[in-house]
Image (cartoon, rainbow, N blue to C red):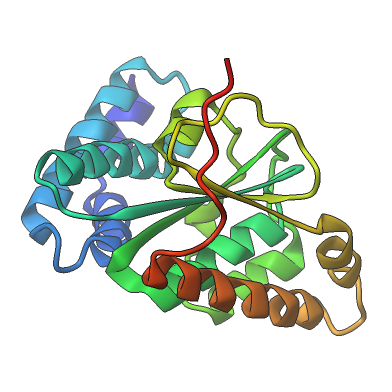
Length: 220
């Protein structure tokens, strides 16, 4: 109980999480509303958590889901893009950061793994920092039904079968072998950034143009 109380009363932690999320919704919601959503999400998680280590990133995603629901209720178009790969420890996380850098508040970019790892690859950490993303907020996350259902666009790095997709969701598959192969280059991962940058830029153009893959139909 002592650890939870101390963590909750750390204003620096809450401020960092709130600022990260407020940047995503700049021009959509006032920072005060974002801060309140983060604080409430954080408090709800802390009441149930035995170990507070991952409360901040979990609060970030909980508050993001709530804000997205509010945006939909208010008919404000905040596009959700989900990148999925094996472990969410490298390319998917970097792709999400690159799209967020291009789209700013127009898109909420997320990543998830089929079998999520425990930590990001070191080259991914460096690349995220270089592109203005906080590696601590990119903790590998599992692919869950709610996250999949919330996405307007799903980008699968590989040939994974994700099961039923919501009607109207755009879905693309990118060749994971090429992306993951360059991640081990001696340049420290620059090849991954170049490859993903090209694909992410093309994706952003499709989103802004209202084009892209044919929306898939929910399977019976």
